[in-house]
Image (cartoon, rainbow, N blue to C red):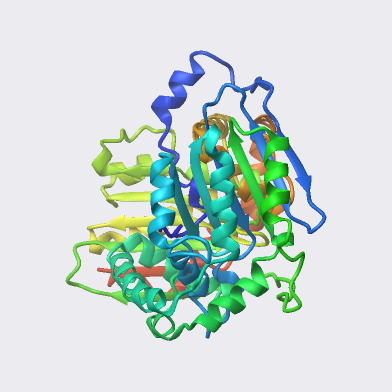
Length: 473
């Protein structure tokens, strides 16, 4: 099953210019718009399980899933990798169904069953025809409450996960971002990888998996989500029938989360045999509930994204893209604003095949960050807001995407912002809000750096850190 790597980077790739121009020709995003009569309904059972739905009467299919407030962050050094390991075993048979019966049942209804693990959530979901929602809820409840965790399956999945780890290690972006978390939140839960270290994958036992379930798979930490043709009351009734016996809380309930400490630091893996340098630079970002959440996204969109291979024009509205293109400093860059429940990472990911220009690339990138603390134009803020709104709205295309949005928001913040509320929140961001965010989070702040490849041209940490407070004339 798929593992959601570097979750929450939903807003990094704002490559939606053409789509937005098409949308903008039909409606004005500067004023609130109508999203129809759909809304998110919620009900909480006596055991603490929350049911949340967005019913679309015209939809012929539904996505139903369980969002659990537990991922790799709920582990410790010894058990790191357990949440992801458990996700792999969820579809390997239960007390009621063998693996073959489970797969055949889903195949016969033409459904789709999947799961993923992130640093803060574990998710199991299914998409099916409306007539099969009852069966999919029964299957989800079965795999969450009755997985056999057979010793043979455990041993078989060790090799599967190790192969997955080998594949992930070949994806440089994933490697760089894992190292970025490890150095920014070193010695803390958010700094660990989702898959866990090799030695843990080889040593995790059935008792570890059962302990994780007992501690974290409790009703008060679960949200059952439905999006599409399933009515709210139907899903509530199915939840009472299938999830009503899940305990409200565990006697081994984990301690309350402590906000992680961001550590100004770096990790470098120099390899001169590689053709490119891959560098991520980040400051401490914002959590999902932070008042600066939307200003952070707009500021990120102002910095923007650029990729030479995509044939992007140097005049994208992003000052950094224009400068980088004109001076041939990079192959690509991607700004990001990654949020967690109580903290985040805000930064940029740079790729270049110009090893002698790495210092210039980093210097002028951070110079652009400094500019945001001092002067921001109305035009670039409006452009960033337009792209951000289009990206968010376009990402909600389909019942699975809507279910994902509902589940993530409710399990993390306790409520869901409707698309209309999000649109209005983005519209309300001003130039001063952007500068205030930059002054608070960027100006003269410590950075975390993760660099891989031909990085001999990357100056020492203190030299890079000094670029975080440069006056821009």
